[in-house]
Image (tube, rainbow, N blue to C red):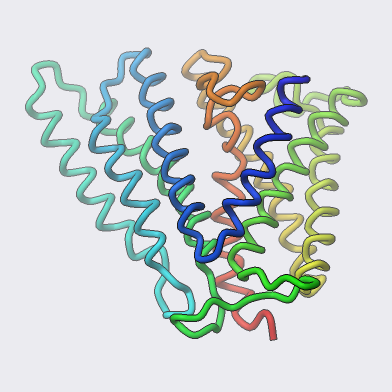
Length: 291
């Protein structure tokens, strides 16, 4: 527990700094590094059960997803979806080409593992990068900002920070409340320690933090409420989804890179679901915010 707390003491201020540096390049680089590390963790573990993913092709796709997201701006009328078909097609063809050159071929397992790793880690993570660049009705060359006291942070940075805070709140509330008061297991075959009581606490934690965050950045309360509910649900689904993967791989954690938490995927699994949700919510419902 002490190690987890110390990791948070160091990690949270670093995350805040990376998120709010103007124009988001340091944040994109950090997400690129984390995506590569997460993909390597995934490919390493699936290799232990007999799969032979084409790692170099998967890693190239991961980098393409993350850094292409840097070039997209919602205010310019583009969407992150434009980069997916190109990268996926190239990844699929390259993976099959490599598989055909192997003496012992297993295209369903090997190509499937390659694609799954790149999409699960790189594609989902890239939504946080494109969310950081959301400008919403701003000029193509001028980021829109939100007045927060004396500061005027970019809209994208505020939304990313909101996602991180709600996700952390959900995880933390579910963990501590479930540990103290949890009795009814919610998914004993996937994660025996998760309880319905903890899950409700996680949802409430995400909702409370979303409402506070929305108030700080002048987001209408109904958007804050909706986003809090979405984050609270998807945060836990992301965690359970990774648990399902780990059960199939018969591992406890994907690594030890993050002290007290496991690997990169163990720490950022929930953000892989809440990040895309925040981006698509912004695109669909926040076009005219702030006024």
